[in-house]
Amino acid sequence: MIKFVLAALWICAVTVGTMLYSFQFSQAKNSAEPPPAFFGGLDYVSTDVISVPVVKNGAVDGYFLARLSYSVDSKKIKALSIPMDAMLVDEIYSHLYANPTIDYASEDGFNVNAFRDGLIESINARVGDELVHEVFIEQADYLSKAEIRNQGARSRLGPDSESSAPASKSSH
Image (tube, rainbow, N blue to C red):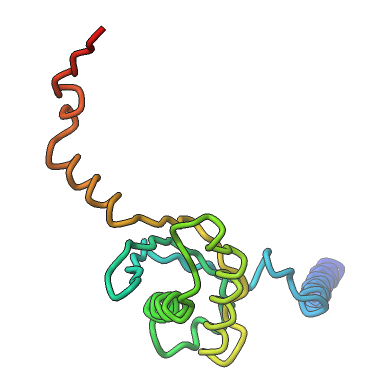
């Protein structure tokens, strides 16, 4: 009977020792090196489609449409006192209106990398810390007033309006 009790105590001691060793080993491994930026510690925040009117010469010239995602520090986003979505949308408007040199209508006038970098800098400067690490553009479009009017006319006429229009006569 004594051998049985000693064997049970030995098994319990080995089990406790193994658990303590594995716990300490896992803690040392986790604290030794932080995870890379794209593999841990970051959350992703997406915005809805944002429509920013583009004003030229005192009139609305068109609309810049964008849907963006941000990689943000998960610890810092929890500490914010204002909603993240509201701050991001406000900063997008502020950034686009602060840069009147951006010409959305031409392909050369919109530098995507400068747009991303400018947003990251302005958001982080506003917060006072490195909150946003990357900006991902899910959608970026520019619609002129003429394109919007054409879309509106097509939707009022219906989908069969182009096919039901009378064909022009050719004079051969």
